[in-house]
Image 1 (cartoon, rainbow, N blue to C red):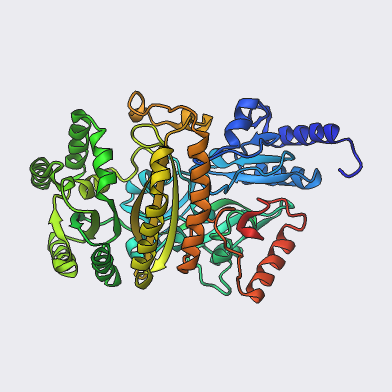
Image 2: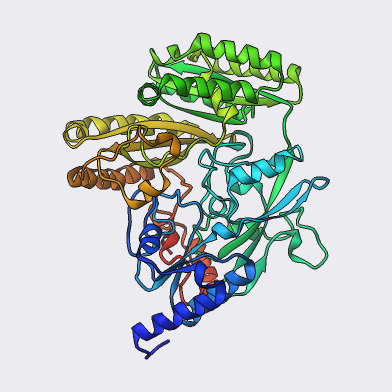
Length: 527
């Protein structure tokens, strides 16, 4: 409160938070506050507390307390951000952790929607819906073991289903949002008494307004997802390419006809390094996973034999790899789509063993990649561009890396390109920067068990860290010059820069209306 001693007011805030969620769920320990101040990339300021509401009502009470005591609220889902998306930028703040908001409230198999709480992981939602033969039209990023539904709606995400439907927001039918003053807002057709949340486009698209807002407009506590029947069968194809422009042409041809549910790939050297770190027993585990996920014994035998024969030979040649996953209602439809993908790629690429494509289908939510397989720190930076701009973007990046290559080698920094698609017209191009360095407590806490004993923490490398930060700024600028759009905007990507003045005024007025004190994720979106 204004005019009150800051220390006393902080104590009063903590007391109000304890009343809201209970002492066990309002954590003021240094360990919890330090962990909440970190993401995959870095740490900023520690909050006063980490608060974990277990219901919408508790979330309302938390936000009322923060509003009364003028404390900022930063909302954390799975914690897999790298863009300062939920990191406190001031001491007088709390981190609202959505992990206890993890109930599946309703599954309506007849009308094809499900309402889940924001802290549900994509892997948990997938497992719950599998029993009904359903899934969301976008059903998660590869980090879905940790990544949450609410986080993906706030920040944006791609992978499973993105080849046909686009990013995570395509699956949202409606939202339950708690505003800065503790009031609740419902979007979509479920926002009227007795109406079900089956339809998004009823009047102005308020659901879309809160999707991709980087958490700046309110706290999502529940999401209604658009569902579809799970396919009867599916398969993946893999191709190698020696020319990036031919790779882009091939992916464009597949994407514009909606032939693939997912498209992803990487520089072959990155895949070679990752595979080289794996033991033979890991290969055997992957093979078992692929065969277990097959739709029948004959298909399992066929897929297993193909993987054994192909092995890792596809990593020995070419510059780039691309993987296309597709599905069908039956074996005949699947065979026809696979033929169409092969024709769309044509002679631009060479078909190789589909080991990685099949593993992605069999194990869609692998251990989250918070460090490299050997333990190096990492920072991904992405751009979504139209296919017509992808090759020029990549060419300028190669020229940039030529200039700083010697410095990167000296300071133990490497960078590799990966890529995927979003819908029929978006090419997602991403640079993943790796460097030797000591870990944050975030990395030690969330290192997957499968990587324990293989990934090892490096020594402190402040020079490498400084170079990575400089590369981050310069690469984002390079992307901007090529007209890039971004997901995971957080406080890293230049959403507000040179934006249409009328649109920016409207967005700022909405922020002012919903959050007049600017306490919900301040600084997000650059507004």
